[in-house]
Length: 291
Image 1 (cartoon, rainbow, N blue to C red):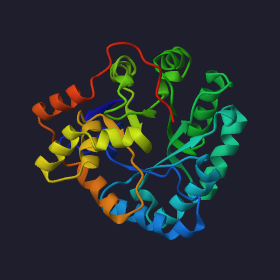
Image 2 (image 1 turned 30 degrees about the vertical axis):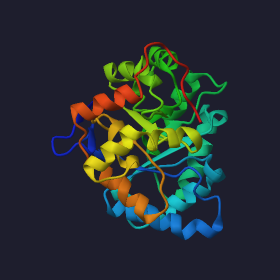
Image 3 (image 1 turned 60 degrees about the vertical axis):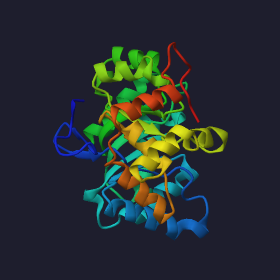
Image 4 (image 1 turned 30 degrees about the horizontal axis):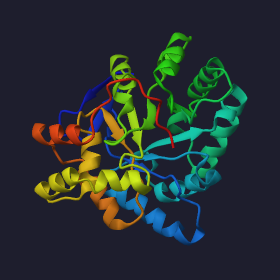
């Protein structure tokens, strides 16, 4: 899948066909789990759309379809404005399983097609069957493109060696400044082969690691110099090269607005160097970080 940096701003990737997809989108992990939060979650996604974060990522796994229902309500009446991504369980990754899982996801969202449909992670079903199932869905118009999630370099090389495997359009993996393992080999491979990376948990996923990233003196200091939050600096860092998406999840209005504004932050070479010193890039192969 060919790609190029947008000539307008560093906040979109232009894909084949000319579709501009924002570098910062909206994640939905943990949405749909509490009925009491439903309307707040719907409003958050709708606000994000208004602010230009028209990429929405979801999955059949999230709240066992509950997040897809939230997304469906949020995008009702404006489907054409949204770049919609969903993911299938690995045990649904054969031809029939993908057909059934995709149909169920389409029904929950209330749409006729997914812009991007991903294998959530690799299971026991051969990649050949997954490719066949994805291509069948694309032929039927159920999906526009397909990709994978949580596949390391060796998995991608195997996928690429199979018939039709080079149609894979994206790999969604965990990536943030405190988890840079993909930079050693997976990210360079992805760039060489024209497979964009979509970063989930771009500001780390809770607990000590998240605090270590967002409360680090370097992140705090750089944020202060821009008049923004450390979270926004973390997001700006992920999309710094213009060819990696970030899909943070937010429910509070202030967080949604912060995420959208982060797309316009430009980090200076000196600031990037300081982040490198605080969170050094990998010097050897590391296991793929997954949550």
